[in-house]
Length: 283
Image (cartoon, rainbow, N blue to C red; front, top):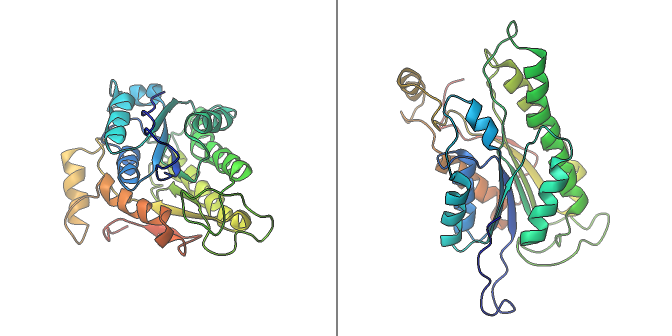
């Protein structure tokens, strides 16, 4: 765990809300980009990572990534908590929230950026791979959202970062402080378990926009489109760029700017949506 030194006079320091971001295992990843943006916007950041996943993928594990990312966030003024967590375990979400709250305080924004993503299609997907994708992408996301809803105590009518306790049923009608943002994908062909498990994640997140409304929580899904975080070859990069009106690939920063807006007070009216942030890429 990494924690910044506290200000010399915490009582007079402005409150920083806490964002919990999953899937921040590599410095060039979307999760890391979101963490940097939210830290720059005044959030404290707890984030999870799982090195064994990156180690078995073709890009490999990035040694010391979590510590390096935490240092960057701290330089931007954020307190940080790094949490290594295997999301295939159903008890992981409880442990993650316990650690985040113990280190930084109550979580205001939950950003789901983690993923199990191994290419396989209808005919070659194994039962083991199918179950692992749904355990990580769907079940863990549901349990994280559920844990967030059970613990959320933000003041429904205040801005993120302002203290307070909700006032019961209906208190969340208004601006609200809570934010849930989940990253998804519409890729299915040749990527069956990933796409199917992300589709289920969409429905869970959109349900949260209604079922957690009384808490003052908004929930949205963001489809970042094609973002090269080290998994594309040159041929694929060129093909995708040619299919995008702006003639380029997406970047982690593109996604981070949208997530930052959704987590801000200005983004509170956007709720229960599946947003494509893909530069107009052809599907």
